[in-house]
Length: 393
Image 1: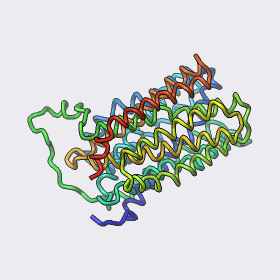
Image 2 (image 1 turned 90 degrees about the horizontal axis):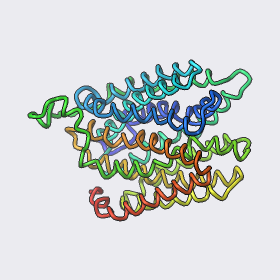
Image 3 (image 1 turned 30 degrees about the horizontal axis):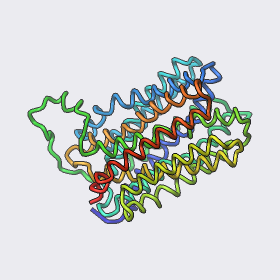
């Protein structure tokens, strides 16, 4: 394996991920507005967003098994195409139809991420896994820079509307599938056994989902991201309550901070250690959430969001590097599926917690609750410091 990161395979993999994540980040501010227009409360918005997580979590064992037995690239391409097709259900102006669309979109998300992370573990140089993980996750999160503002512009333009946003997201997903198809021929084909547990029935192997080697980084990633919907989805409703204008700038600045922060901070974790990096991520996220409770201007909200997103950048990049280091080549698809399930699971749980907290305690109470949850995560990370350190070998 070459020691350089910038191969044709890595570049096309990043391109496919960027386009797949473009759909997600375009829908992040638009779906809550669409559902609110249909008459949904913040709690119902949280339930609809959680549908995305439920299906994505349920299918991960099958998708991971499929990646190991068939093709990591094929799984990723299939996920992108499924994403594109499912969004057209949103053209039915009915809350359950949107919930179904979001649930089906979660299946495509499972393929996009399981295939992508498996490919990253396969092609990343051993000595540059932190840097590779930072660049990879930085490309994913860079979709936050342009696509939420583009989505809001298309939504409010004289020629636009929700329908145009939905069609555009489908086009991006199809383009991502095309980039994956161009990449597929250059992906190395590792030799691996057809079954690492020959005495276990195939159906039990598929639904054997707890992978001990990958469990700790998965739990930490889930904990880090459970508060993320408040910053990326529900923040648009908070901005409406504060009567903030030109809120597209918020997504541009956060996207830029995440895009620049993930590669730099991912590389930093190779030097200062995984444990310190994860702890730093939790601390910054706590500070960002607390800031949100005392600011009422666009600048203040942006400062709170940037503080949070830098913490999320370093924490997510570090846990991804840990997962790449620990993945067993014979079960790479299953293990990276276990790791990647933390994203939709945290998204679903976080959406339900956030929507419920807003209905019960308002936005300030919601941010305080999430800060307390992140503080508990910080204590957990400190207690597991030795296990985090042992991952960097």
